[in-house]
Length: 303
Image 1 (cartoon, rainbow, N blue to C red):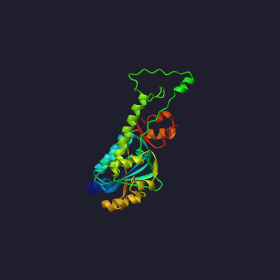
Image 2: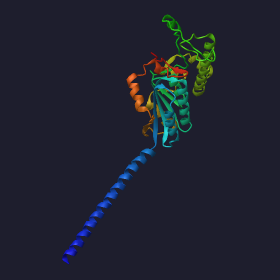
Image 3: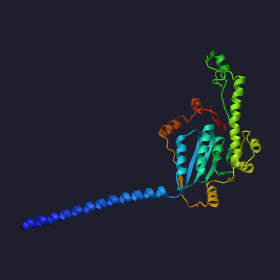
Image 4: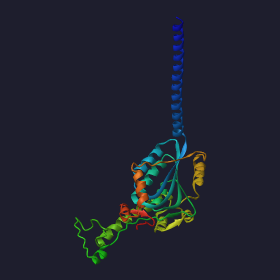
């Protein structure tokens, strides 16, 4: 009888211990989940200033545009800083980036911060902002459009190669390194360049509150230092990120104390992009030929 009583007492003791550890385990798990969820929620919901870095060649990039759309739709992103260090890129790339920035600008202030270089499509990108800041020594401007090709027919004649081209019309695939650049083809190409150039000039005039005549005097392809650009009205102020934040504080009451959160652009093939860029550095001419279409680029390193 005594043994039965001891057994029952021991069972109850074990049961209480087991219950205790089970409850403790559940509480620990719940606490961990709440802590992680709380941290995530705070980070997700915390007011901040978004920042996107635009560097290198500017190409059409749907992933970048999607990231900017998320910034536009994020009520906790109170403003967007656009840090630019680019010689330009394709006209379509610059146009697409400009339009994405304006969609952000419809909902919150956007400030461009120019680094070492912000020329051609890089300057077009800056036009998508509400306020442009540059260093005194920043190179900017280079308002214009370029299409480059080469005439290899003389070289091919010397080495005994005669290209054979069959096409539906005389202007098809012109300009073409394997054919002479005909007067008709040159005229058609110049008309396209002129149309792109007019679009660029009109954009500068509208965004910088300048007359078209004023812009045309600046749009001969030249680059400007930051100081020169401010003097002629291509930018608003000299400085860097602190000056950009001060403008946001003074004009939009966006506190300097708000943290800056960098916009991440997610490319599915990013590891491969990084690998090949590091291996070949885009020095192959075939790589450069991937810049399809009109180019708004300062000093393209084609060779």
